[in-house]
Image (cartoon, rainbow, N blue to C red; front, side, top):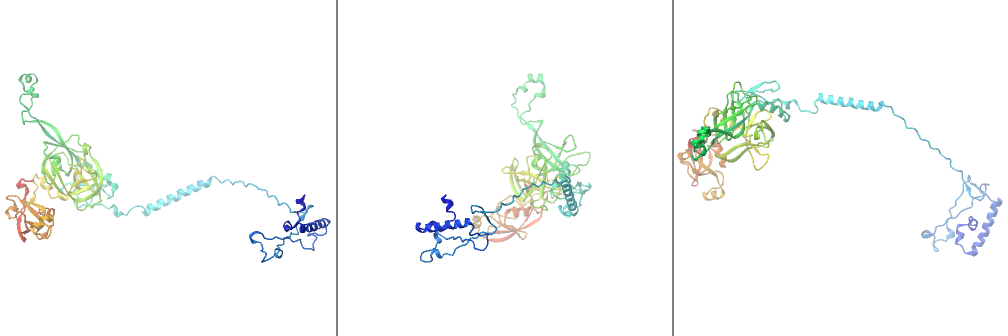
Length: 522
């Protein structure tokens, strides 16, 4: 009840003293009665609404020294004329209108809309493909498909079946019509018939002590002489396989090029050719131990397919190459790689001596035992080298003899002649700093003479031990390799003028180039 009676009391009445509050309560009750009797009403119009005062307290209330609370400017709240009061004196506002919600049905799409979009996409894609094909947007120019010249200087088109003349004078087939890595299959198809498998055999050698059971007359009376064992150092007629390698035809008459180490020391050589059921027995014509080259000859009833010899000096490092051979007896195995380097020198020991290879091509195309003698082919279908050796301590390192070395001696090998080996008969070495100091030289450029072969061209020209050769024919040569290469490029019997330093003085010595074959030295 007290709460209801205190509804119309002023807000600040709660903070007054009791004696002051009683008077206000009386007035409040009088005002309540007057209101109930209809004495004063806001809606009647005429008088102002009763003001309601709000004062701030807390940190923003007025202080005693600045401003009195009674002086605070009141905030007057007025009730709107549209408001209505109920019997208890409370304002009654009309209830807001209730809004009803409706769900809109989803519109169903027709079935042909996605079909039409799909067909439009197909039409657009097809149009773009046709336009790009006609405008040649994704392919190179026609110049990239140009033909490369064959070894004989004539251009051949493999697709039309035309041929070109090779360096040997025979007819050779050009293996490609494009110069791109994706023509490797065509290269293999055109080149494989000219690649052969070479097998070598040696006679078995046996020794007999002379008192074998098979030599007893009683045993031979029953079993005959077929069980007789050869005597000491007597050769039997039985052959056993001794080697396996590869080769290729470079002349249609049946001339085959291979490595010397493939056929060296063989008593019998057989050649297997594609298209023939039986192998051919081959004849060894000429060979060179130092160059590791050999030429074989077989006889057939028709011309054999051949491969052209290309220019190994024209190929660049990084270009694609293809190797074909018979590694471990797997016929016509194809491996692909790039030319890794040129002018590589290596040294290999074998049963016949030490081979000093020069100017080799290096490739990462896989070369294994049995690949020796097979061709290394460029993308024009031309032979640029003969696969020869592979590193046993690393993978992806193979070597091939370049055609620049082969071309100059090919006819000599075909004619079964010894390949001339130009030399002067002097053992040379590079100059060390210690040797230069002892000889009183200003630099280490040049080659020092270590030894002189008796009766050799150097011996006859009075070249002496510890002479220093710094040049030949007016050209300087700083290392022994450069000087030896220059000597080997000369012909046997040709004159050469050596620039020599002897005892601190520079002199010139004229020497005649000799043939190493005449001195029976390695």
